[in-house]
Image 1 (cartoon, helix red, strand yellow):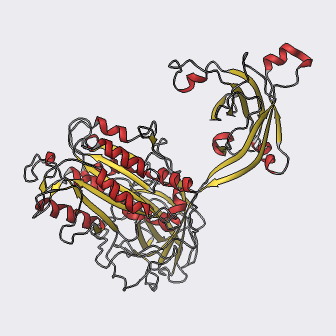
Image 2 (image 1 turned 90 degrees about the vertical axis):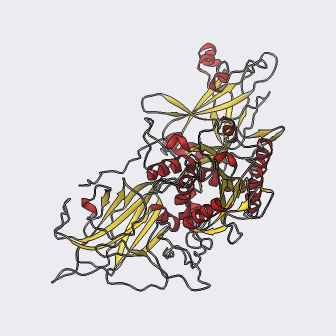
Length: 629
């Protein structure tokens, strides 16, 4: 039996995450009581094992008895009410890179105290969806399914059904709050014998045990006793736990230069700096610098004070002004405001993959297991599809000879039948891939620059607002042939709304590919430096087995691969939007969300039941009424 958990924790604290709070209400529930109305309670489950795709089969095992589902919490019982607004909310960790499949089930409670055995209570309805669908719209309304059903999302012209409806609202539990201020120093002590000091500031958080931890360091200002540093921004949670009276330590140091070639890396290069002085303050005091006159903090050097005694006044003054609290927009702010993730994929059709009909080929189509290209495609698409309401993607191939062509195509539309890169749904991408595989001649070389330039051209049209952000997935079996041109293309594209994911398949040595994934320092070529890190590279072989030679289930491989390659995307999107000065649209007035074309089939993509196609010209409703896929 699946047991509820008292609090929903984060299994891996090192991964980027957001806590999302869900609020639930229902309308027009069934009345199963004879002398009064139903007494509803809502239980929230998450699928924690097995395939995490919306079921297309009738639900045979009650969820509370199904070991693949874990209860994440339950509301209070609302007595005698067919339109309950539950006061208890649910705090869930949200991960962009995961498929988090949820079930909401409503029962008519037989008594105020509902235990683990739900058989005495009447089932009123169920709705199943992934958390990404809820956060994409902030407010999601759906028809409740009957005993064996999973419900369906509400369309703007739908009417109430016998089972009623459920409305789920999602909002981030806590925003990223920062304090921003300007700071300068005046009359700092001179520490250098032959010149003025080279001062910088350390901001430290003080803990209850008396210890202190560095949370921010300013830049070094050269040869001045009256420095003005760049505007400072520090996360208030990191600085003082958002406690306005918690002590904050500000240290001022004079940086000693190292001889050329001798400067150590990291913190060691600050190890021999001279202490100028220390000031103590609080968040509340810093914020007083935004109300007119600057806040003045005296720097004290205890050694110098002990030596000079009463003659000592201070070692300089810090002045702080323009102080204010700023709340930076988050990934979910943009998504809730209608920002769409556009998706393009490029598949390697070079001869080094091996003849597709040969079982050793990376393109070999097995009857019982997807090949590595299919695994990579599905792992990324299964996540990204929830952030693109049109369900239309772009798919390309490269490094092959097309039918009736003697030359190699550096880039070609994967859909050879229609001759267009646009395909509908995951099933459309997979179908185009399989058809192309049977009709092209694998050749070479492995060039990335043409595909990056093509997709970057599309991203160039997205730079005027926050409506769209482009993701490019490249799947390849070997080291690229045009590394110099590829680096140039990535640097050129680094200022665009674009993230590039590269997945290496097979057993080649991909060591040189890692230089494209510039986590430690920005990509550089000659004198040109990338504006942002936009590339993530991984090899799929790391995820295929459990380390003991036993191959994992394809669903597990897809889940683990997606977690690795997509976790940087939210930060890349918000980083770009901040760089451009873009704000998210309000939830009440989001960017237009285009509906899928009539031939889109959600069942084939594993995200719901079939729905009647929208009429021509149908526009997707606003946040309170998303389309039913």
